[in-house]
Length: 320
Image 1 (cartoon, rainbow, N blue to C red):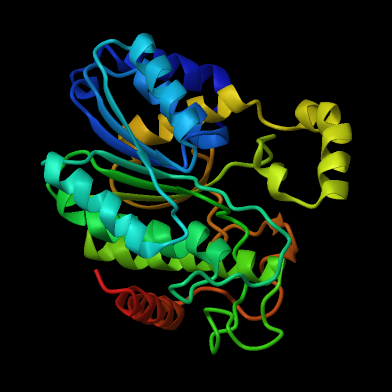
Image 2 (cartoon, helix red, strand yellow; image 1 turned 90 degrees about the vertical axis):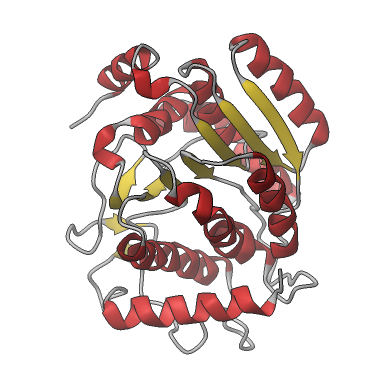
């Protein structure tokens, strides 16, 4: 079992390796929380990196840009403001990156949209929570595949909920039917669809590392969008939560480890933030809503094909 001490030791030595020089990375959802911690760790431990990071807050983006350039004067850092609930915005951002770069070594995605509200469709007809957790992330990966495919190493990391996959409504993957959408069902769908789509893409592009990772419990600022009673409850319980959760700095170290260790450079990986296997196809684990082996399986070639077909239809519904 990998521990945080060995992870920090491996990360500290990375900058001395030839591989650490001239890397190009894109961080989506990196103006706070896990994404920001992973971004700062990446910049601190690489040489001459080119980094694009994407978020909603321009003021946070400006501050982080200044911090990163002071942290590593050899870095080239650019903040891109974007609403990642819209696939059309993803297209705009990725076009801008593709026009400036010839390679991409890391696409790291951890945007959050935590709300207890019911289905909230964007003008594109896609629920905003599902867009942020799944559809926009896949759009980023697909749009940037030409850059990823010409790079070695190249990794795509989506921080969501590997190990918490559960059976989905295969007749309504987008959860559009009346009464089908709840906070928990959209979470189950986006988590399982991420693992299934990454399985498909890992077969199509085997030289890229496709990593679906679970962060475990990390205290972040996402709760600001919750109803006031829940925000108050979380604020009161924050000292306890911090005692039993992963420190945000350790989380950043773990995700940098996933981003740079040769072990994860190719193929499909369903792991936790330290790189431990949490592949619920082969390891039983009780997640957010009970055992993953109860009832119908969430995985299989037929489900990979069905989810990919659904994803292609959603991608095609928003023209580039």
